[in-house]
Length: 365
Image (cartoon, rainbow, N blue to C red):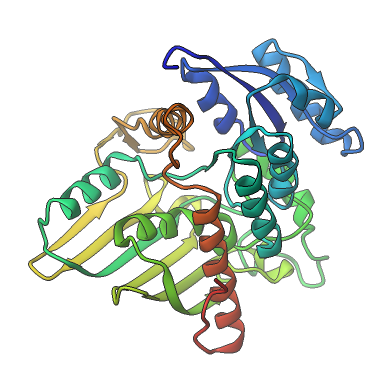
């Protein structure tokens, strides 16, 4: 039914609002309410109510009751709650759009994959695979421009701060509390790891470059070797999580993948960061900047926090929702479903185990 409007329930919106806003911006979806559990901390209710007021929709403190009046849910709470809310929605027969990362717990991911399959619902996990540069990369590979893909590398350096720099705290200063830091970071959008469980950059942002590699290579990861460090930010040091990592991937089809990832600080780059793909094929190679196309703006009295380089022609959010509506209309799978995101979570878990042990690790299938 190409004219059908799908009614979307926002299940918690305490991290970022780009996800439910992207759903609301597509003409085939309508936000009907926000819902969360009544026993959540007051700051979560405040954020949920603010979003509900902005969209002139009600806020319910009862998830199960709200699930009775929607076609799908939009899940954007703390990362450790993604799967809990998504599983409850799947059991109610509702389709799911869920923020990244799918979960820091592989067991939770497995439960969601099983619930999605059992209840025959669609699940889109948020990604950036429809950025213009990624669309162009996939087009070139499909057309055989560089022959058979043999190796791929992704630089994914994210130029946002995460609180005080490493080593800047006074001697004897108490460790930075993870949750307090995330609540403080909400003002500038650098709270990607919001929640009680500290998360490193591999867990927070790793899904984006690993989704690129998964899509372009079209093969599962066979073995992982990784190194991680808390190099830039004191909050990461104090909480024992990475802000810099290198990952090597051996794929089932023989392709080799590598990834360099880090949160490198706002002063390090005029754009959102150095994010680039290097593809080596049997007949040639490609180097693709994820930010292109872009324009550079250098002006007198320019706000210091404004990116000097600005992306243009970025329709990723709309194209993701168009991809999802096609999955609903045509009963096919979206570009990154729960099973695919679960495999990425398994790769991240294997990378963290490898970094700890110094050995190559096979992700759990």
